[in-house]
Length: 156
Image (cartoon, rainbow, N blue to C red; front, side, top):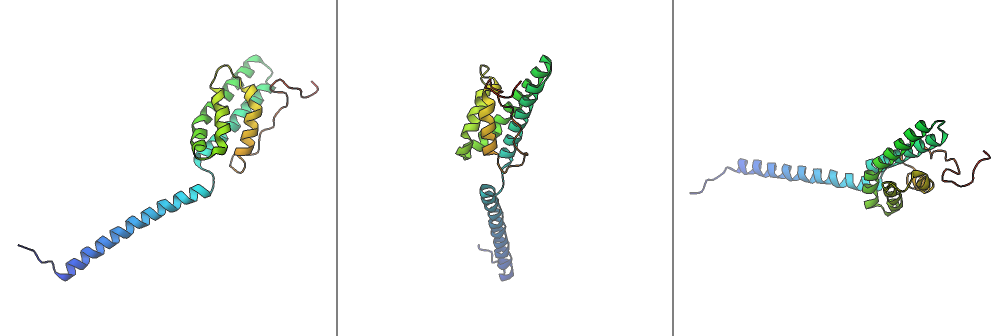
């Protein structure tokens, strides 16, 4: 036995299906539009976090160079190392989609090796940070004291 649905009921079901399809398409369009904007628009949350963490690390490293006591130096170096460790995950995420960030990720990864002090990495890290983070919120590059890695600098 077949049940006949009045014409008005069929139209209502058709409208409901049409509205559902339109809602799905609109949602997908919003997602696609968001993805396109993220790909060519402003910086991602990961790039902002990476730049912030690297900047904080470089600032802490600079503070360690200016510290007047051994304990203050050690505290600032530890803070610098911790900030750089925090930068590893967001930098890896950004580097997976943008090859330009591969060098910074490799430098940060080197910091995880206990035999490589940040003073050795600081010049390369500063250069990579200055290039990769240009135009990303986080402020201007930190002032770098030449000679931090043992080279000549200053008259001191």
